[in-house]
Amino acid sequence: MRIDIITCLPRLLDSPFSDSILKRAQQKGLVTVQVHDLREYATNKHRSIDDYAFGGGAGMVMQIEPIDNCIMALKASRTYDEIIYMSPDGNLFSQAIANELSLKKNIILLCGHYKGVDERVREHLITREISIGDYVLSGGELAAAVISDAVIRLLPGVLSDESSALTDSFQDGLVAPPVYTRPAEYKGWKVPDVLLSGHELKIESWKHEKSLERTKLKRPGLINE
Image (cartoon, rainbow, N blue to C red; front, top):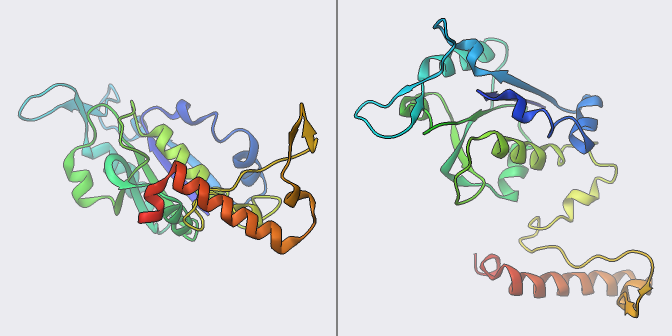
């Protein structure tokens, strides 16, 4: 899989991809992540990629030309399944969308900044818009990192135990059950006996019951969806 991220602040993405699971996935050759500095595609001598909004209003707007130049340059080398704009009013990101994107071969993530992008970018250059929540960030870089993390960990071979991703919260529409590790008793606080029983069917039944209880308590909306 290949993920190309377009941003005007590429250094913001150094850390998320340089450690832990995302780093190992790249080292194994399971995914290629390329971050592209949008300013390199600007055509003016100051390498500016924003301007004032027509009609007035506070804040600057990212121009269409450097974005188009960058996307066209990338598309000249390969075909992209999705060109996604990180937008606060896009479709709310979910595990189902992460699962879907993990099956793609090549995707572009476009990070907005300032007051957003020229509307013609949204009308003509992208295939979908995604939001990671009902709030506004300074830019789309953190959202791009979140989406990349959620997608990459689903790729075969990324996790040492591939079944781990299949038992994550939201994969079955429920949040995950409680988990415990050694010691079995600490300060009088005990691990549930069923988890120590070795009885696989009883353990799975307990996990499902606890997932359902926790979902009803913490995320009741998932039950009603």
